[in-house]
View (cartoon, rainbow, N blue to C red):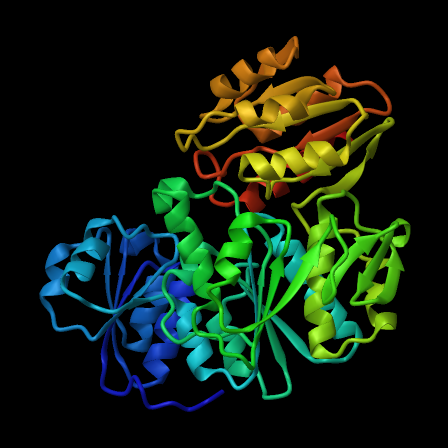
Length: 451
């Protein structure tokens, strides 16, 4: 960890706790800042706030009083999930107060180079693949970011010979100033989080922040098949490394005649790859590109690709009960992710479990992918909208249930041996569950109860 003096004596306002806010407040306190923490959750229920107060950090809980910003703060560190439209954040912006997320702090103190991964879909799978490939090649990777491990905690333990492989959301990337990954990976860009960003253009700009501080000595690994990604990549000063599932490339990772190539070098036949789903080929190509830039040999890459079957909550195989195969895709929090999950089982009969937070969008884009779905079991705020598109897709069997736990036995009763029972909600979980992980864990437990 770099022992920087940037924050000594600075007045820093941390808004929003959870894991990232807690870690940021602790780090800033250790770096000599005068820290004030403000969180929505009442103090009596707020274990994180209580821990910080015991350290000597000032905490204000139970709301976001605007008068706090009458104090002369030098910096605001924001929990990524808090929208910039929130009154206290909007007022801070009006006052010209610099606003960052904890990823910025992680970069400032970290001795190791970063590999940053973002995109609308596939971030977690790609991040995990890169980590596993570097680990297999003994490149000393550490995994961090939106994947569940707070970046500024990981950065404190990283040495110069480590690589910090970091999953990054658009929310996190909006709050960077100097953050600069040596290798930046942008997978794809689709309509997502428009309730937060307002427009796709604003969402794209946030994702493009991944490149903004890179120089010619850095690398941008980018999807040649995605027009939005190509446009953002052209704004980068880094050396471009392209990947494509549709065409050969002079430089980069691509597919040709069923074989994955790096430049003109054969790496692996796609039939030998263990990770299911055509959509994962994009993630694999991106991961191979990043691994190759770090110096990972083919042998290590092949060992990972022939054994890695996926991450938890992303098309996770849960088990088979009386011939029915259950898959947990709770991380499918948007339409595109559910499209890809359904496409992964094309031609097989599916019972789909879906629904969740209503962000104001409709689900008509799912209709072409529902043709081989024999029944749907719906829950959450979006159940009526999903019922409409299911009926339009010709699905006659539609059930409404209270939650995911109750959806599992209903789906089982509707199914036959050899059917796929797939949780792929196409929605965020926050109407009923704290996280998509909680939703997925409840699904997995309910499947085990069937057994």
